[in-house]
Length: 164
Image (cartoon, rainbow, N blue to C red; front, side, top):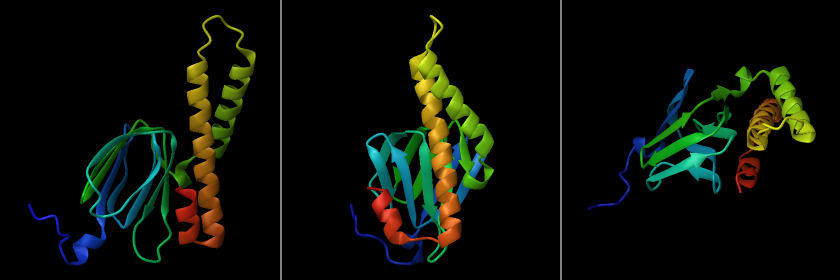
């Protein structure tokens, strides 16, 4: 079996599908995908070895074309399947950064923090409150990163540093 990379322009991109219960959040070619895997942030380039991993709530970064600003998406968690020429991300919720409701995310964060502090009811579910807090914080981080990038443009060194 020949594992040599094929020459040609197709080798420079990998096809990406990000799908949620609400619909398709992104579909198209990319040069790089960074996602919040359970073992830490994972970067995927064209030709990556096959992989199946769970995702934590967080930010998905998709670098599409040379010099183009990265697309930022929020995921509530889910699954990511990687093949050499295809990445499929399945998530309960996947939102483009510009679709995140900042007020709702802040309210969810406050609600989760208050619930974790109170623990008043006997049927209190700490794990659910933690999950709600993690999702709200991930939405707010994605939104803040998108705002910062729009102010200063895409910075490859920052991406490399933040994905470690």
